[in-house]
Every structure is written in structure tokens, then in C-alpha cells.
Image (cartoon, rainbow, N blue to C red; front, side, top):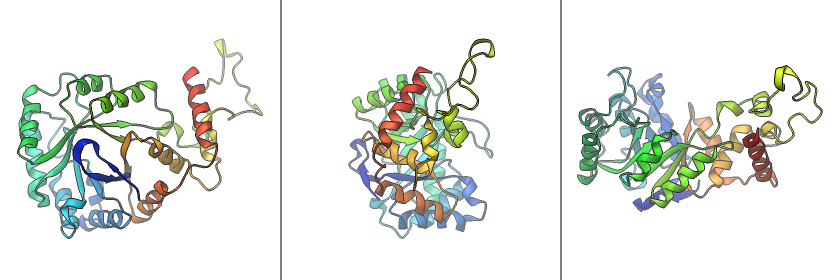
Length: 302
């Protein structure tokens, strides 16, 4: 596993972050704990809780109780819809209440990163931000971040109130995403990536045809059904590279960007954790980066 600095925090985080949610409790708390143990054994020192579920927080806290707290980074999503407590809520009471529940249930003394989940333009009042800043000043959270891809993220970045930007980032990310990352870096924000393997590329057929029209105007023209050059200049190579899966190529690509501090990954079992944890140690095959760039340029022009 490789490690990178997390913005101005002074902490080093693993290239991968284990994202864990309430679904990990399907087999009981022991299953969630087993996933955390597997991540630690693979060198992953960052764990992200997707909700403030106290049962999940307790399971993760128990798994980490035997580990030096200074070596582990814990983050949590705030404001997400909760099946138990209703819809999205960015009120000061809801946000601080979530932090209270996680700290109490987990036994942790602080949360390293509180990440607001895609707040809308008018969804989070100034009183909520003030409450979170107070939590940060008190040491209950160390860093405050925002997660999302919409244009409203640009406004949140410009405030200078946040330490971290979490955004989707993959081989076919639009220029707006890249511009947003640069803007965050200029504000000394750390950047966390998710969505490195988008649904639009998860099969060979999708990867070959994404954004490429099959037919022209009125159904005429376009690419022939049996085009011998089908796939050329597209992302089809993601599913045709020997020794690599498409997902692993996409993950490795995200990790080549020095702007990215860590990438969020899902893993339902220890075998998947081990497979993903091996990716940061591998270099992309020669020429693959050029293929990615060619495909991205063609997709942008399509």
C-alpha cells in the first residue's frame, strides 16, 4: 500500500479508503468488523462510514480499539437520507446529533473528517456550518469536507470553509471535474475520489459505445453495425488488456493523479479488499495512459 498526505492535516492516508455502510451489518456486526480487519491487514488506514448508524459505528469502533488511534483515519458522511430517521437533514441539530451518535457508539475521541453529502445550494443554513466549525474548534472533528459533482460545489469551494473535496473521478471525467479539483487544490483542500469505475464503462459493450452514436440524422449513417474498427479510439481496451480487469485499470488510473489523496472503494469481502489493495503497487501497462487520453478526447468530441 502507498500513502499520501491528506491536505494540510499533516496526516498520511492510504491510497485506498474502505467505504463501509449499514449493508455491511447484514451478517451481523462481526461481518463489518471482519472487513475492517481485512483492510488493516492490507495496509488501508482510512475507513469511511457512509452513515451515522450507531450499530455500524460501534462495530467499527470495536474493530479499531486495538489499533493506535494516531495511525487510523475515520471519516463519515453527514446529511444523507437515513432509512431509520427519515430524509436528508442539514440542520445544526441533525449534523451535531450524528457526530454525537458516532462518537458515543464507537468510543472514538474524534472524527478525522466530516463529509457533507451533496448539499444543495439552499439546503444547508449558515447556522449548520457554524455548528460544524464549532465542532472542529472543539476537536470533535478534525476536518470538514463536501462531497458532490454539481455546479454548487464550485460555490462551496470558493467559501474557503472546507478542508476536503470529495468528487467522482474516472477515466472519462468531464473537464468541469478537473477544473473543480484544481480550484480545490488552490484553496489548499485535499481531494478524495469516488466513482472511479462508472456504470457507463462496466461492460465491454458499454465501454465500446459510450457517447458514440450508432446512427446519423434520421437513422442514416453512423457507425456500421459490423465495423471492423469497432472499439478503436473508445474505452473498449479496458476490457481487453491482458492481466488487468477494467475496474483495476480505472482504479490505477485514478491513483496516477497526484491531486488525489485517496480513493473510496467498496468491498463486500476480504478477497475483494486484497485484490483492490494490490492495485496501488502496480504500474499501468505501457501505452495505456495514451489510449485513455485518446478515448477521452474522442468522447469529448462526440
